[in-house]
Length: 275
Image (cartoon, rainbow, N blue to C red):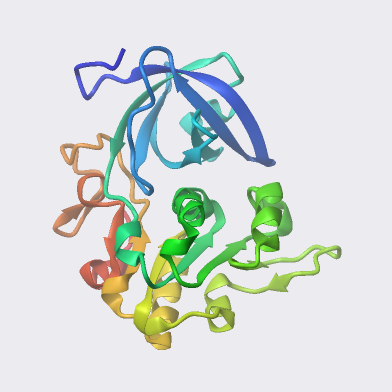
């Protein structure tokens, strides 16, 4: 049963765990009681590791009709605890929160999904429904960069995406291993290799902020209007209700007004470093 108090998490059970890389897992979560809450691509949930704390994690999709998927990298006490969970373990979940990727606005035009590192996880939740209704879009391209080949996520699924004739996939790494046969370099540089019509394209971007700034600049240089470039910010969120002030970003709060923002709305603020 979902808690009537929005600050109190509901109980979820870990149904499945996928190992994505040495420090990253995807958790498949099912509610102990009731149904999976309705969410939109790009929104996030607060995941609570009992006795340790909670963190915001964007939805990376659904596994068929369930479970709810969250992809987590072990970088702090809470995320490390979440990455240690096994099938049958329980955790707290509250949400969803935040603004979604504007997939309906992109219909009828080209769609670019530009991901850096773990940013592929929230963009996966936009890519899957776009591919499920492929006829609604023009060209679709996925541009994805990671630190090394070992850090690339969703390996088997990326292979399936690359084999499709109706999806352009560009993958690059910062540092290559001797066995790597793909591109080496930063992901914004792959925009010039992408087939799209800038005047009718929407771009969704998620990753480290420096990568998003350079990607936005490259998209603007290619002719994509700033109002059609959308970024998902990952500023420090704590309450998800715009009460604690931890994620305040100028006049906005990332948890309430984001995490997805149009570039024309936040371009000036992107130069402000997180404290």
